[in-house]
Image (cartoon, rainbow, N blue to C red; front, side):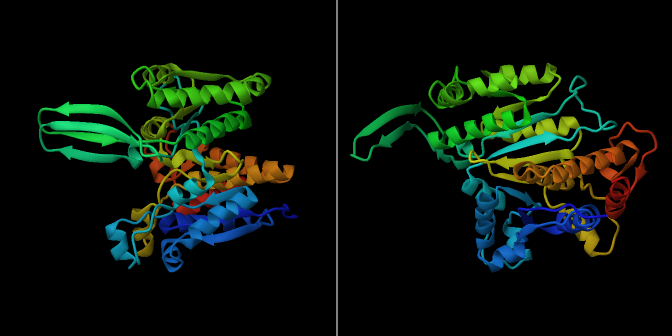
Length: 398
């Protein structure tokens, strides 16, 4: 059989621990037999990030801007224990955070819907995609414990030295205070990424904040989204037959629970952090979630939504059998291959991605799955496969 040809490479970002093991299994069994795979390879494993003083992460993000499509394995974000375990020079930053900052991207996460893995919300029939603004708010906040009575103010000092003050609170006893910020340029990038992704996937887009309470902070998000939509996207949405819908965050939550799904829900940073976990858990498993970082310039970086599966990796190192779910990592590859095919006009490559996804879903729906899915499936008497057996079962159907 002739292998499918590629004209432009995909940026390949290798990762850590058990997902790194699965990464190679997926390539060996599901990709290399069928595709003349062209990638520009970057090792984002923690040891090599440490060797390069994390330059490899920056290089991989810049390569993504060049080639427009990347696929990323799960990586370790080190804490103090990891610094000691790997004898690191320092506690390197999250690779995902570095890549997001360079690409100025928005993260879109959606569940992979499979018969036999039923949502907790019975009326959810279609995936709900969470678009999370990945900048600012409480994640870049400043906090202070107030020891006793006193006044807290927000102070803005302009470049010319003039000041504007806003009272936060007159404390008459101990308390706490928090300051947070965002940047209009980042909100604009977030909005355009959301509108572009809605057009790309032909899905309705919801956006929700609490502008009735936060009349400047949240209202600015609402206004920027509406201004950009009116000026740049309204006619394109009409032509595509999709809708942009704004509502309050509490109303959005109520509507989501009663909906059938099938739309993108854009959220501010904290809301997206919380709601993506709620949606993934309610649909069945974080290991059954797609995740793609989309920049307003049209750069795409696909990855699994979960971590490196550390516990399974330690079992693997001891020679013990693991049953690790590789579905999200497989779908990271298929997402990148499909997008590469779309951008290059390579229909054969895009069709292969569709077939690999269908083979993966068919394998689970036939009752062959990893242990985590066997514990939650409604399929009678499922066959529990180990990590490699599951990938080979997919290869058989492919």
